[in-house]
Image 1 (cartoon, helix red, strand yellow):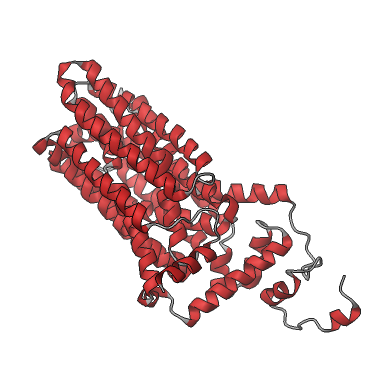
Image 2 (image 1 turned 60 degrees about the vertical axis):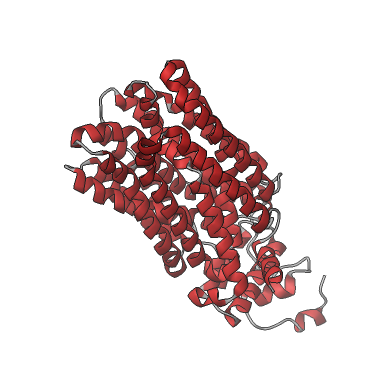
Length: 486
């Protein structure tokens, strides 16, 4: 215990950082409010991650629902193959814009309010899609919906990463991936239920329900300590940290955040931060991980699974129902990934999943031509699609957003994650828009073989360029990237 003499020598400033600097190594604390116990801290972190991840569920639902709705939208609006591709891919253009803007918005108004605004846009755009009288209105509504998808794709992992302790950050950030595939599974189930009625408007419109949940939930949660400290609100930052860490560790974390932000303020922040070689390298690696995840065609299977299965000889209603298997295996595989992500090194998990995806794509290229021999081969093709997604969702998708959120330095985190998100969504858009015309031009078999070749390039990139980030604080990762570049 400190003596009376010790007490007279305490710093007289009242900033939380100075209090933390004095009390970190001591048994007492300058904060009179009792901290939450370990169980309460764990509950709080889980609630934060679960509510924010509703944005991931919306992301998944809105990208997955179009796979079933497109069969009936195309019939009602008499769409060409190009227009079908536009209905699917135009959302991705909006998502690219939303991803870039979302990072800046999150830095200005906060991660929390950015997600609230995304939820509002989700709601409005969903209503627009459901009541669209023609192709043009549907297209515009899908673009606006894409803005919300892009914002949430960046801010949800960013928010969770900045709120979660390092030892469970992997599982909690990857919870977003689980919610994405859960949203896609829900979309497949809704599609199968409503397919018998051809009720594509209801398929699209039901997304308004989780959108409202996201708005209300985020209004009840605080922002992240990093953002509070960035805005000079150290007291608010400390209060949030005390809900996620033990008392002494909360003070230490606040001091670490302060020191990191001050050192980066002395260098460069915002766009000027990209003048630092180590910052550019970190963001470029994040961009590479993002693009390669999309370039292997994972979302073409999600978006166009019913269309592909119809091409193999299955009737439309059967194809829609069959894709439920894709949704189920995606959820199960992501749960497996959540169990692995903080136990297996991130880099090894990403490489292993990518290699499994390459093998699956080659197998898909071999089975696709056999579907002309009977419906049994159509189901074989479905099985290989499921295998491909199992590798993608358990390893590649689980680690992609996690590695991106960990690699981008805090001084440019909003902008940097936005840049990575833009490239991810542009790659998604380009692959999705080109997919059906390419399949019609060279056949499904060679298309999937081409995806496999890209996957091999991705494995080489990850092996050579991506650092291991597992089990490290975000500050430690930044220091290691800086040392590796200097």
